[in-house]
Image 1 (spheres, helix red, strand yellow):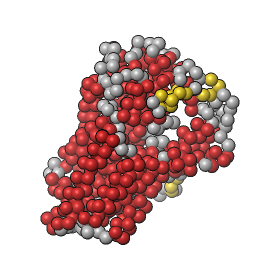
Image 2: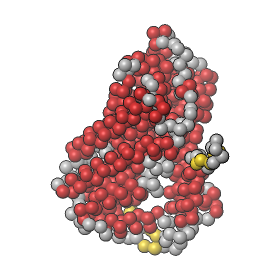
Image 3: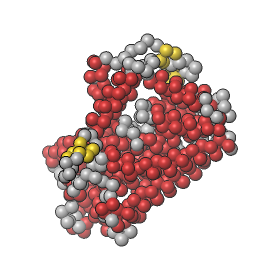
Length: 469
C-alpha cells in the first residue's frame, strides 16, 4: 500500500494485518498445485498423534479448491475458538476492572512507587513473567498482562513499544527455554523417550543468560526513549488517552469498596496460577476464570449487573480484532494440510539436516524448527509433527536426544514473536497498537543475539554429550 508524500512521491505503508495473512493463505493455496504431495504414517501414543519415521511417501496431488480456500478462515476460527474466546474474555475482564476504578488504583500506586526509578519496572515485570511461562508454558499470558501494563508504562514516560517488549520478550524467553512447560517441552521429551522435564539444570543456566540479555535489551531501548521520546520506533501516532483513563483521582481518595475490589482482583490471580500449575488449565478454564473474576470484582466495587454487562461488551469489542487474528493465522496451516504438502515440507527439512556435517546438526535442527514454526505455530503440534523425524536424524549421529529437544525449543520458541502466523503475538501488537514493521525494526537485534546464544548452547551441549539428566 502507498500514501502520498508532500513532494508527490508515494511511500510504502504496511498493509492491514488481515491483508498480510490472506496473502499468506493464498500463497499456501498456490503452493498446493506445485509442491509434491506426500504423507507420513502416524500412530497415537498416550493421546498424541505422532509421525512414524521413515514412512514418508508420495500421494496423489490434492490441490486446494475454491471451496476449501473460501472456508479456510472459518475452519481456522473453529480450530482455535477456545483461544479466541479466551482472548475476548481477557478484554472483558480488563474493561470491567478499568470501569470499576481498579486499574487506575493499581497504576497510581505503581507509578508513584517507580516514579523516580522507572526503569526498575522492567526487570520487576520480566523476571517473574518469564519464570511463570517457563514453568507453565502459558505464553499467551502476555495477553493478560499487556493491557494492564500499557497505562502504567505510559504514565512512567515510556512508549507502547516498551510495554509490549517487556511482556513479549519475557514470555517468549520463558517459553523457548521452558523448565517444565507440559505442552511443548513435555510433549517433545515424551516423544524422545526422555525422563519428563530432565536436563533442567542446563536449561536453567541458559534461561538465566537469555533473560538477562532480554532485560538489558529492553532497558537500553526504554532508557533511550524516555530520555528522547522522538527516538521511538513507533510510526503510528496513537494518543496515550486511548490507554490511560486517569481522571486525576489519587489512591488516597479511592473509596473502600474499590480498594477491597482491587484486593479481590489481585488475589484472584493466585487462584489462576494454582489452576494452571495444579490442574493444567487452558483457555476454556481460563476464559471462565477471566469472566468470573471480572464479574466478582465489579460487583464488589459497586458496579451493577447491567453496567458489568456493558463493560463486557465494550471489552470484547476493543479486543475483537486481536482475537480473530488467531483464527485467520491458523488458516495457513489448514490449507497446507488440505493440499497434503505439510508433511512434504517436514520431510524435505529432515533430508537437509541429514546432509550436513555432524557438528552442525544441532544448529541446523534449531533453524529447521524455526522455519517449521511458520507453518505449525502450535508448540505441542510442532513437537508431535517433527520430533519423531528429528529423533530419527539424531539417532544416526552422535547428537543426544536431549539436545534435539533443546533445538526444538529454541527454534519453535523465539520465532513466536517474529512470524505473523503467531496468533497471540499479532494479537498483542493489535492491543498495543503497534505496526508489524515497527516491531520488526525493534526486535531483530534481540533475535540475532538469542539465536546466536542458542547456537552456542547447542554446540556446547553436543560437545559435552548432554544426556537425560
